[in-house]
Length: 169
Image (cartoon, rainbow, N blue to C red; front, side, top):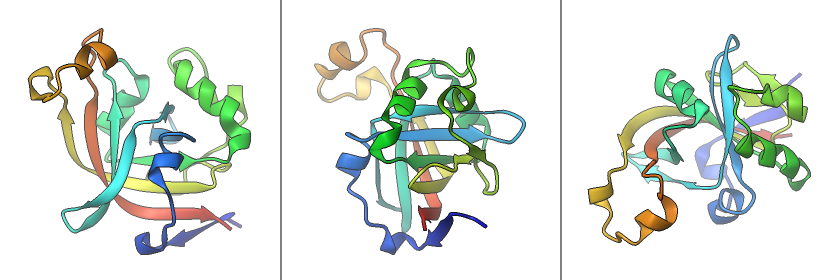
């Protein structure tokens, strides 16, 4: 029996400034054979093209980017504060070098169209709609570049339609 229930997008109660910017989330993509996850504190939720959407940003060197690029869907998982150490590890260690689930005790679940984690309090399954690498010349405030991109490793922006919302029962 699943410990999650599906809810419609208009029933979601979430403060993205807190849930993403302060509490963080995991971005996960792949399949049961191979997947990866990473912690993210930049992103957003909104309404675009008459759809509920998520906005995520991934730097080119992140291993998870390879999976997001090749898969049609990704998940966003939100956790309660007891998982802060896990989120720290998933944001600082590479899945190329360690098995993050094994190292942190999180349980991957493959019952949806993108992998997610059984310990999450909230899961968003998102179908990619748009992908665009950021470009230095597009920054209207060029002062952001040396502060956030001293290595010139600009993020890629992904917009995904939120297809499924799972909340802990």
